Length: 502
Image (cartoon, rainbow, N blue to C red; front, side):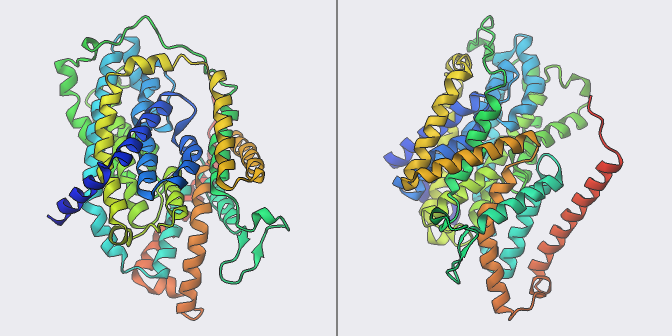
């Protein structure tokens, strides 16, 4: 019953006029950038991060979270209508969503994805509400050794479980850790790796790194791609065309529930995120299907299950971020950075010390999910028109907002040059097939890991065995070691049996 009282308090916070307005702005922008291929939640949150400095932390997080889970709704629209995934997690929706569109069932596909997204997201919120306080209570018993080992596990999981080569992921984490070391040492006051540049005395600007890697880098990569395709105007999306058949309904519920279960589980694990959740849900559904040959040809299950999974994962991803201070993916790392900048320390004490932030955010998820249903179904015609905007008109505006946003943080032109440098760096990472997301995780968690490492060594008087003699810390170290060994094995196996590209 205590949870219901806390949730009621959260609704009182979320229903304030300011928070409602920012919640609507967040989910609307999230749907907007989700529909448009090539922008995504990371670039959008990076651009809007400076705006959050001028509003209360609760309001800022409500808006940023709305953008995050709003993109999961909007990403399926371009996947179904144009075979262009608006978000990485929506790529799997193309497999069956686009064939449904080609067969004249685009309206049904859009309706079932919206409904599955709403139900999957709602179940994810319930899990977040019920399990976060219990996890926070357990985490209160953690000491510096446990926090260091847990953060180490989060970084290794993010690098080895993400898409692409595990070795490349680990390399990106190490690069992020190196970037996090630049600046003034908090304990000694000595400047590290600043090379005599005064602007680096406080380290690299988080907004500049995020905007460069995921904003400018994505624009450079996308500007040469075919973005000026038009949605098929011959097929009119009407409310009548959205009504599923009885067979569609019979194939809807169990795949939706299974996808929600897969997404809820993987979303709560550091380093997995919505993309892995969606692909795992699709793989599970195809594996247990009695007619797997239907998949890839317009199967309703192939649309419903991954959409429920990525929306459930986008909600449960907040569990480790808010209660443990461990971001599950790059977007959660940005959320973590926004909280730290606002003077709020995420972790197990967040619920007790800042209940208005935690419960207000949870309550806003319910409000945002309802708003997304209202936005998605009636405004599908507008989203179809939006897909006809040529990308050559979009990217100059994106670059302009990036420059204005990063300059507004410190009113310093040096940050604009940093955005340019990180943008070019991010583009070359994409060419070399390096995932930039682990780099951002390493940059944000690096200083926190260093702080807990020093505390643990001080309390143990320099005895490094403290990390393996404490049971919880030892368990984290064991899992981390297992993941590293698996990554090494995968790398060796890949060299022995290289894949031949078609």
